[in-house]
Image 1 (cartoon, rainbow, N blue to C red):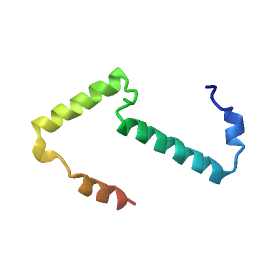
Image 2: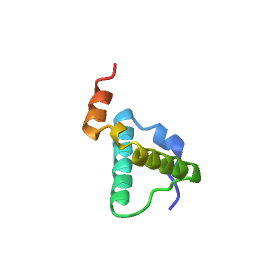
Image 3: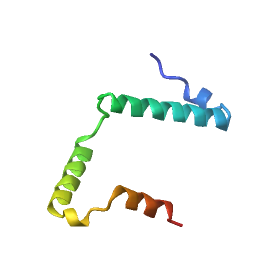
Image 4: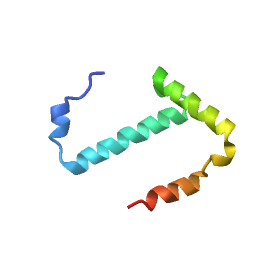
Length: 76
């Protein structure tokens, strides 16, 4: 399937573009949840491995997701 013309997409009104972005993002999440792997570069894989190793070495320094999310939402 050919990709849509970017100039045509950019000519759409903001609300339509936002709707398309949401639909695209939802489709990516759905694919990931159904077991389809998202592309990860070698560099990204190394970074993920490093972060996992650091977490394993220092589990007491981990921040719970609820706390991290609250911190992010309360940023100025």
